[in-house]
Length: 263
Image (tube, rainbow, N blue to C red; front, side, top):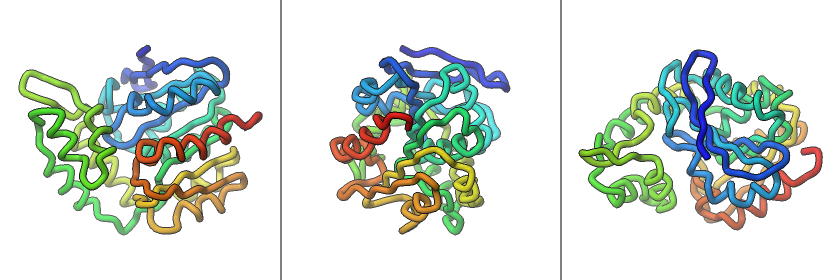
């Protein structure tokens, strides 16, 4: 079921209710994604609680308005959680960074945190390179096969992921997230060190790293060591979308964590 909530600046945000009863579990997707990309994970998570996904502003079915900052999107997530209550937060990539910031800034709302393949310090990475990559994407895709081919090398699961993040219009398939907005989001990551947020995270946290991670080498293990209740696991044979590349291994890592009483 899909519904909307209104952010404090008036933007309508789309929320997906995946089902389940019990303690809330909030799913936060990655850059260019949407809540529905979590469907396969949400199916087994519903045995542990009420599973809800949020389309970040500018993504999926949510409205689009800046500023395109971590602070703005964390405020959105906090607003969505206020109606749900204290939750386990599971975030992939962009959603993982937002989950860290949410746990740091709103500890009363986050009972446990799972971060999938995301770092806190990408300084030294070029925002210009991100702009060039995004700028090279077609404005319109002729078919879902073209979407899969464009995004699916060398990891086919990412092509499948992005095929769920487009909408069909009269002239073809369009990305649901603006390339310009995504570029601004990624540019902030290249300019800022978010590591200080870790000092304010007090809840149990599980950091799941891909073998072919987007995070700088060693950073996710160091992040977990910096947290008072942090754990780190690296899953072999995976790219950035760990939960899609190795769904069984991802579930084996995450399910005991979200099922721990009091977590």
